[in-house]
Image (cartoon, rainbow, N blue to C red; front, side, top):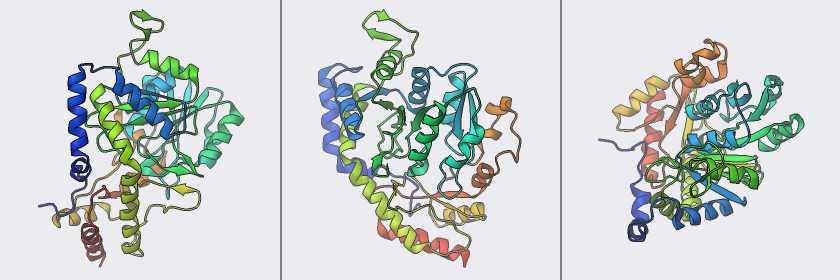
Length: 369
């Protein structure tokens, strides 16, 4: 029996159950399920939340990245800077756009791309940078934007894991030329299925993305560009409107839970804790990720105690068979490889109780004792 599940959405969904049912029946009775009023309303609200002009909803986070790359003209032969440690979708979207992902190591303490290393990897083929706000921690966007401006590069933020986070009082997802995000159910803002979105304040990029997601059609039966079918459906849009209103509150519960961890896991074994909130950075703790050289043993020990954990991500992307054509070998990206062997995500979902966090921390202390 699990005393501390790694993830449960029950608390979130119970707290808005009435509104979710109303959204379902409202959508059912309206009878329009693709690109209707609910999508339009959600797009306006999500753009406003980020203080940006436009939001273009799509089918998933990968498509949000891919369409952003296409909108910016990224094509075959181009290179795109990506972090060495991230979700598969970041690299995959670049590859599917026909471009080459060029990894830059992350800061091992923040898990986000090391802005000091970016310029070392730029070539005449570099066209864009994709900073990933990983595990809910913002990247150093001021430095990244300065590098982009200096070298005439585009910036596409991957904000799938940091809905509501801020850097220097500006929301992640509002810094770059485009922001690509995911509404996969486990995200801080998650749908009841797949979903994604692009945010931009550039009308030209918006118009391209809006057409591209719908077969390249700017209006019915008129196709100006070769596009794809990647649309958020009306029901998911209706659900996301409800959840968006709760996002800041749910993020605060993640911060409170994280503060409990910070207080109870200090100076235990070789554990390295994630970064805390400071004057510049306000994370949203999509995951609470610790590091330890005894990761497998600790995970097995916690599992026996009924405590569920997860590993993000156990195989470095550059060593995945998918990217063998890039000819990376073990040892090429040591920070990513080291993190793949040390990171462990603890439960941090909204609704996790204080005594459950205390049970987790007590078990961790017993293991190291």
